[in-house]
Length: 116
Image 1 (tube, rainbow, N blue to C red):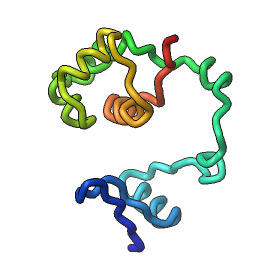
Image 2 (image 1 turned 30 degrees about the vertical axis):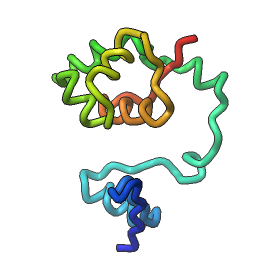
Image 3 (image 1 turned 45 degrees about the horizontal axis):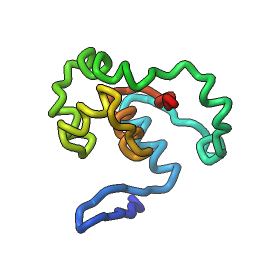
């Protein structure tokens, strides 16, 4: 397998592999097919994405609880402190894009609608 590992602070953070090998891994994991890479690489129109029915940040706590995750578990999985996650859940802090993606991944939702 042609795999490239990208590290940050000496720890592996990302794994990059050819699309065909990625598809083969998805198939081996249960027959899941991913999107065409051309579709993935296209920029998303922010006006169009805002109209999607994504959960708002005030639903983070109920989503976490519905998944059976404790606050500390989700925080650890995302790579932030439990206190910071609590601030995000209660609306005191807005997460950056990387934390947002991690939260969406861990909770199994396609993304978030940013609240002004």
